[in-house]
Amino acid sequence: MSDSTTNPAPETSEHSVVPAAEAFASAEASAHAEHGTDARGPLSKPFRWLSIGMFAIIFIAAFEAMAVTTIMPLVARDLDGIALFALAFAVPLAAGIIGMVLAGNWTDRSGALPSLVTSAVLFVVGLLIAGTAPNMIVFIIGRFVHGLAGAAVIVPLYVIVARMYPERLRARVFAGFAAAWVIPSIIGPALAGAVAETASWRWVFLGVIVLLLPAAAMMLPPILRVRDQVQGDPSVPWSLGRVGWAVLTAASALALSLSKELADPWRWIVAIAAVVLVAVAARPLMPAGTLRAARGMPATVLLRLIVAGAFFGSEIYLPYLFIERYDFSPSLAGAVLTGAGVTWAAASWLQGRLGDRVSNTQAVQIGAGLLAVSLVVVLLVAAFTLPPVIAFVAWTLAGGAMGFMYPRFSVAVLKLSPVSSQGFNSAALSIGESLGAAVALAITALASSAIVGGAFTADFAVTVAIAVVAVVLAPRVRPRGADVASIDA
Image (cartoon, rainbow, N blue to C red; front, side, top):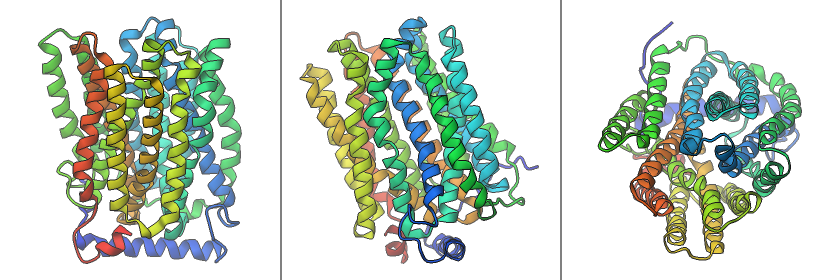
């Protein structure tokens, strides 16, 4: 058993392109040998039930995420935990960092199935704890457990896509993952609000379990049929050191979230120290060169972290803004998330159809630019109390921006990953997403606590600044070297 924290993923450059491409060519050849030539799309006969099973898992995760965002103001009031509002979101994001590192290492070593099944079981346990919590502390413990497991589920799904689907279908599969957010985005927020108003917010968590069981029953048979193709490599060592870095990263992110509760100047001292610790501890969990935005895979992982911080750091405050300032009901406030979910899925479908007519770099540049513009408009609504419909339109555009670029992060990174590091690099993408959102939530909470009477304005000002950084760094998704055309397609 190894305690090494050495990064198994090579830094993206022209020297790492050929081995990665050869690994994927081998995986694709295996997929064609297994499924024959009748593979016109993710829902064609060879892949149909496998795709539907994975889409169902994403559907459940989307419903839970949208529902919690809508009902959290009610949960915080009922459990007398308004002061822990941001922490209730930050805890599952931080826990997800640990879950994804464990799942990535486990998946590379033992294959996708063990980590997938274990994560699903823990997800149910976490929902039970949250749904029956007598106080905010127990509720946050439940959020920790289902955050740990919910994030870990994504890693084996990414590896299944990389191993089982031809390269030409992967962008469409990831677009399908985005499309699985459509129905939850349309009905999830309003339904969660209605359930909370007519029964109890607790049934939102317990009801997700009812949805998860049939989805798991549908998913398991096709996964079992392909388990030989998603086996791990037992020579990949367990890395206790990397798990330790993940725990330190999560703890630092939580310390950043809690720093706003301290008095001046300690809140700023603790916050600065926590940011430094996050950067140091996260480094071994990412491809080499990520924190300096090295071109190619490292910059791609970093960009996903940044845009996740900008988008999700804004998303949790929008329903809160409408409930507190515009006196919306929870169901109506949740409906603001619907437009973004629909446009996310539609834009994701569009980029999948465009294929190599729009490169990965171009897709990220377009998406980052549109996201920044959208968040500026939301900031203006919060700052000048403009009509809420303006924020709804802007947030709908923001969803489209995310949908257009998000699948390309996964396509670009997996294309450059050796088979033995697919779990690690898939985990790095998801870790970046969780870490970006957790840090953004903590910084917005600090900013709002420092500005009396302008909390929402401060929140959205922070996320606008983060989005601007994404616009500046987006061109670095394109790798250097002679093979750029083949990589960036």
